[in-house]
Length: 462
Ligand SMILES: Cc1ncc(COP(=O)(O)O)c(C=O)c1O
Image (cartoon, rainbow, N blue to C red; front, side, top):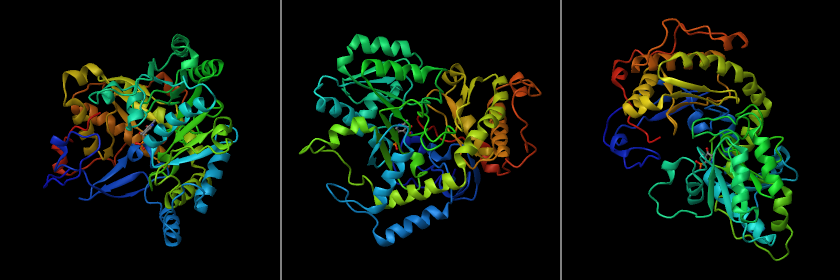
């Protein structure tokens, strides 16, 4: 981190009083690693913001985008107009979608997808002659982006604060209790509920995999009451859990995607809509759904998505994620012996979190920044999530050795920040059931840069 004249750049989710002039400027990336402008190399433990699934530096995506831009970069897709790559991508996503006869509405990112979905479900019910079905149910801990719809749906309470009245037609349920969902719908009256929004694995709220049986039970609750089931797969979509979609088998009504659609090479989102829900929009003569974004179906972004999906398929990266799931657990599990660690969550592909004790974080506001700073000293880039856990969501090309490097760096950063642990890391029972993993914990992740020893990053609001 260098201190220099602040630029005018207003960072998202940042304490600008601390960040201004202290930007960590990322200059390049290759695979699961990035390099800063001043030449430091980091293992990217988060795949940027959960999106760079195929890894950094994929020239073939750049080439595909350049080819598209050389013919036509983009054109309006409003009304009857289209670009060929947009049509092709829609058909490809429809074939991949975990529901029948999916139609695809493109957006510029995940928050747009959430906004679009809220409008689709309410409009669907009004077209079906049930205009009172407007309430959206969301879960505690959930994150559904930052537009006003997503802000209203935020299960992370701090993300709702300070904006005056938000959408009043929102009800919140516990994140892990399908019976509570049923009770809430029954209390509101099913005839007033449009949809249930659900991240199959809660992401920004702290990486909470669904309790055993929760998703299918919640799906059944919705089906029995005629409530639409919306899977927000902005993080989990396109392979992060070791399956193309985490809602496979649930027959969701809508699936919201973004991030991994292009691995972030260009911004794009897509709402996959079951044919049965799309039908009134598609088959009502004279009806125009007055919704869409300037960049809905942007041709160059669509070209990036096609090339990204080609890589996922040709390199078998989703199988690779499934194969690394246990290795991630094996790498992280011993961290539970740390005084400051109250939980380690994993078991859903390449999604994990190391939960720091909330009491430690409440007692010492520098604890999390010091841990993050210690990780940077050890060559690992990650961040704290809303509940005070460390995010672990590397790109799909990460190796087993790199997962062990990551774990060793977390261990070292925790010790340096003041957390104690048994002198030798315990042979945890759970390890016995895990397959052999290779390790290069002997080295390779440290940094000898003296300047980093005092490098505590400014607090990024989490
Ligand atoms: C589950 C979920 N939904 C929606 C969003 C919003 O996506 P975007 O930041 O692209 O607007 C995110 C972003 O992290 C997300 O994790």
